[in-house]
Length: 161
Image (tube, rainbow, N blue to C red; front, side, top):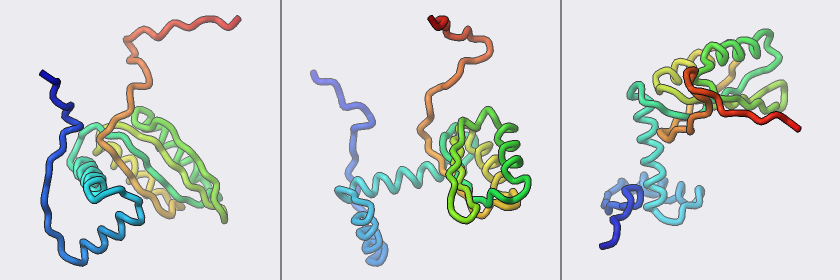
């Protein structure tokens, strides 16, 4: 007897009715985003909506990015942003700075942790004077562990020859 399909490959058929205006906007979105079919587009939209829901719901572990746009010439701003990241070192994985035109910087901060905590960090960063815009984007898919726990032995290292 063949093995049943893994749960992630099982599909359910759903029939929906949409107001004409929403349908037209959805068709336009599908074309612009290059979706192969409506099922793929609806699945992507629902997946994002579900992730957004869980990011608001509470302490579910999530991974994501905090994207900031700021004037890097603003005195003390880069240090304030760095200090907030250091204060939240358990959730902040890394950051990338992209220099833009007219003294502007885009900073993308990779984060993982409880959704509520990630929202608090994003809000604190967005409240910094000189931050022009920003956004928190989360997903339920987590990154694998990147470090051992303090009580776990570290992997052995070999000396350079």
